[in-house]
Image 1 (cartoon, helix red, strand yellow):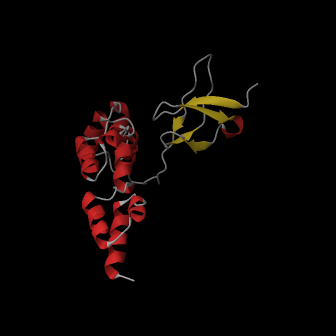
Image 2: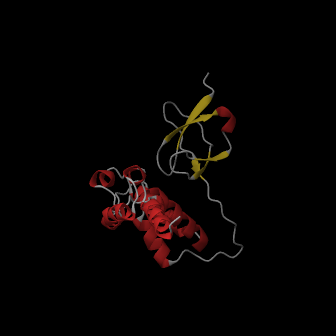
Image 3: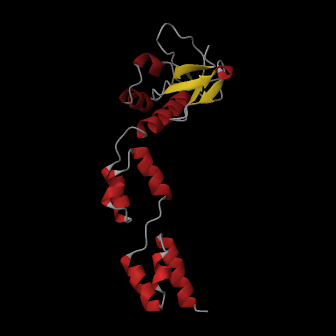
Length: 184
């Protein structure tokens, strides 16, 4: 008998191989990060779907889902009966979760690609961006390479070819320019 059991993530559809000791407990999908409860039994060849877990504090007097939230949830593919059973707080949590998951599958937007291209990313690098979420992460963390103007200015300030060749980020070039302008 195997010491692992298979589950399907209810959010992204990834097949998860889980050690038996974790069955009945909560965890996170290693693909999309959504919290799931590992409960269910395998019937025949069908792999069970884990249960989506929401971490929220129960509101003793919850406000009903707003019309705007309901419309947005329907656009994201949530069934009508699920929408009507949600409170305003639960709807907000569900929208955030679905937007995060959807971003992993949506193509990067033209605005994101333009921003990254303007920041110095090459066409080849732009084509390799797999999703809208990946583009968002790059926008937050990616540092563009030095500009041609920075490199030319460094040459005029007396930086040698070895120093210039070692620069990989625009911020590094700016720091070197500052250092050279201050002098020894």
